[in-house]
Image 1 (cartoon, rainbow, N blue to C red):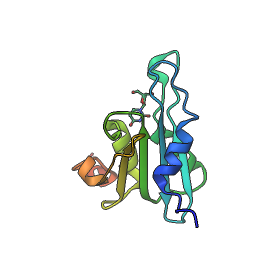
Image 2 (image 1 turned 30 degrees about the horizontal axis):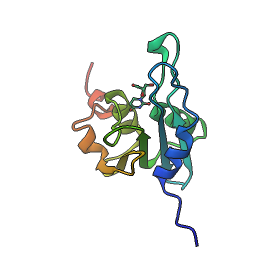
Image 3 (image 1 turned 180 degrees about the vertical axis):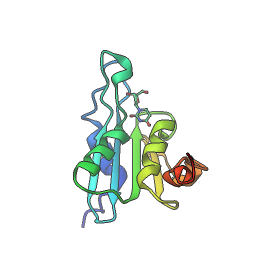
Length: 135
Ligand code: THU
């Protein structure tokens, strides 16, 4: 029997499709939701550099377009000396849909991986609750 396909495997496979002609740094992301579905994304760079988007953003957009919003697991991978960590903006994007306790596995192509909870990656995340008593 072949070993189970992990979320990191899914991120690694989709990573090949990244559009990264400027940085040369392809990133793949995969998200598992409460329904058990997996959504993937890649970084999509642009000649107008700030218009580029991260892999995590692509996976989240696909998830939301499919009508889902409950993240239970995340994986991110790139070809780097150390496991690739989500950028600050992506930590905030993940936290929008991932409650405390959700594991984020960061990996590289050498097989290194580290898993941290979303609240460890983004302590005291800004969230909707903070806007509830403001004017
Ligand atoms: N990148 C991601 O896709 N996700 C991250 O969390 C880190 C950075 C992409 C953005 C850009 O296309 C390339 O990596 C180099 O920064």
